[in-house]
Image (tube, rainbow, N blue to C red; front, side, top):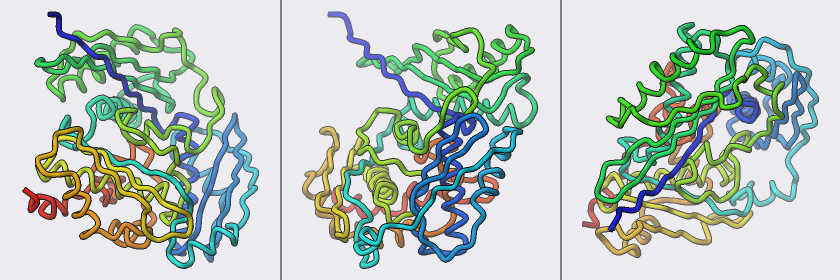
Length: 378
């Protein structure tokens, strides 16, 4: 009987992609608020097209910030050299929502997922990890001046072949990278294949005879918000597990941690990662659900895809016993009131130790400091 091969694909985008431009603007505004006011209530949405940026949403804070200047500084930091026009439509948080949040309840209803497996040392699915690595390497080379002709807007896509009983193989790597109008196409593509694609394949000890696709339309000069409208929260699968695990639908960027769309998703990832790292399962999916204004989750679901060494109910009981899953408890556990969010979309929210390596800003939800709690179950 022939072995069945499954192909699975994940994609990633750079901070120069129009949607991530908007994510970074929204989170930079959040950081500015939290720097002055730890209790700021922020739900900031951004839309960008050409040189025009529209801000909307609700912010209630004592912080005194200049949102127009934050937008301009963020655009410049990403690598674009234009001065945006800004329309500010931000208002204050609805008192109906505040009424539930003020007493420690969730800022909204919803479902959130966290996931971990043993495919990588980061306990992340391999395809999305490689896709982010490709973008990170390409961006670093561009910023160092080593990647000629490249501009900030980049996308990657990794297709892996899963065959039972055999090592995973790379089937296809696709990269779409914005470039100068006058560029040497052959030199540009050879650099991408040799210095980016092959380097990442070798990092994971995988094959280098994969199919290669680079700028399939043949040209990618117009990029960023000039090439396509951007919106906050439109890359939620890129931000998480690359489609390998479910997503509740709520975006992260621009939201303060009283919004469980963000904080509970981070907590679910934290729990799943510590469970897998403890050795009691090789794969773990966790769902948390909340009701607006209610402190504790209305459900906790754990699925280890039959890889668990102990009963699922024991794992659930351990979570309830050892972790405060209220918004307040999550915020305190993961230290989420700090201004740490501006770079979270730059490489995905999960699977990396630092949000900002230069300033040693940690992803607290990636810490493995609860392993012993779950090891005791064995």
